[in-house]
Amino acid sequence: MGFISRGELQRLVEPDRVHRSVYVDPAIFDMEMERVFGRAWIYVGHESQVPKPGDYITALIGRQPVVMVRHTDGAIHVLYNRCGHKGAVVVGERCGNAKFFRCCYHGWTYKTDGSLLGVPLRTGYEGTSFDTTNAAFWMAKVPRVQNYRGFVFASLADHGLDLKTFLGTALSSLDDMVDRAPEGQLEIAGGCFRILQRSNWKIFMENLNDLMHPMIVHESSVEAARQQGREVAPGEPQPLVIKILAGNGEAYSFWERLGVTVDEHGHSFMGGIVSPRSNDPVFLQYVAAMEKNYGKERTEKILSVNRHNTIFYPSCSVQASFQQMRVIRPLAIDRTLVEVWNFRLKGAPEAMYQKTLLYSNVVNSPSSIVMPDDLEAYNRVQVGLGTAGSDWVSLHRDTGRDRPGSGETSAIGTSELPMRNQFRAWLRYMTAEA
Ligand code: FES
Ligand code: FE2
Image (cartoon, rainbow, N blue to C red; front, side):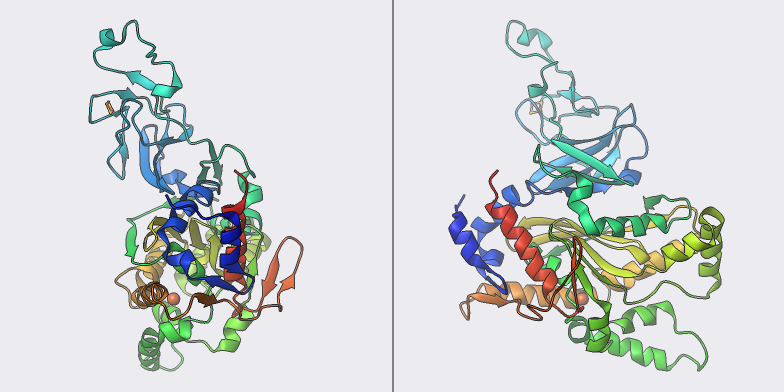
């Protein structure tokens, strides 16, 4: 693995520009896997994916394949997906249910808390130091796991901030997401879109709060929506799909007003583009279910929040008002897997979930008329940064115009504050003592 000294890393990140090598140098990627993804809290999965004992999903934390599994006592464990014998990946499926895990190679079996259940030919181990009760032979537990209202995060580091402190200001977006469920619980529903991006993970992460790009990158889908919108009879409400698509075509002044808010761990969120609120019968039925459980005042308070993307640096992002989550799994310096998950609001009419799917299909699906335009832009950035035209990426916009608050900083929506803030966090992770 290439090694880049602290001093050299510091020279790559200036307050308002970054060196292109942070997106194209494989040695940087190796270090990120250890120092960013090996230290931060990383989203693994949602507890609704493992409702019963033995239910499991597999995931990646940086380069580490892991299994998130519900044990017989109901506890959720996150285990390294590695056999205690010769290291084979034990669980090959994306999800499933198992009474125990059996390695495909020599048949060692593990309980769903990772402890060793049995090995074939036990007699061969007699008189050796092998011991089934010694955790060195188990599927090891990831050092730290915490569940916040159903969202399970894990950290490969055995020390550091607790999850709530780490999530900071962004925590309120997870609350926003869960509070929208009349029964106060979410569940992942339907499948998952998986998008393999031919670009560095940070390009996607930055774009999630890039409010300068929608009217340019998404021009074609905005125009299509406007054309369709003109065909809606006067006095008739615009269909949701048109509102969502046309939202990207708002003027710069609209995006400035939305605002962005960041906090010290690299997280950030922006104001909402399209409100899910409407007077259609489905939404009114949903409001009635909310009011039944929360009362009028609390319901109003919950529904008056409207945020678009919230970034939980460095591993995921939610769009709370349409129950979307995107999970970022970097695979290589120029390869990033993004997963798109949809949540059902427990206690809400089924038709609300259909709106969630509509949003996902219109905006986040790789076959939508929105997402591929972003992908083209990410790929062009990746290709361009690999060339010799210049060594620097500009993050200058609205530098020096931030509005510091208590524990958070905000700016007009078109500011590049979220990107500058991500790189401040990045540099801290990359240069911190272990
Ligand atoms: Fe798993 Fe041998 S590598 S049992
Ligand atoms: Fe976009």
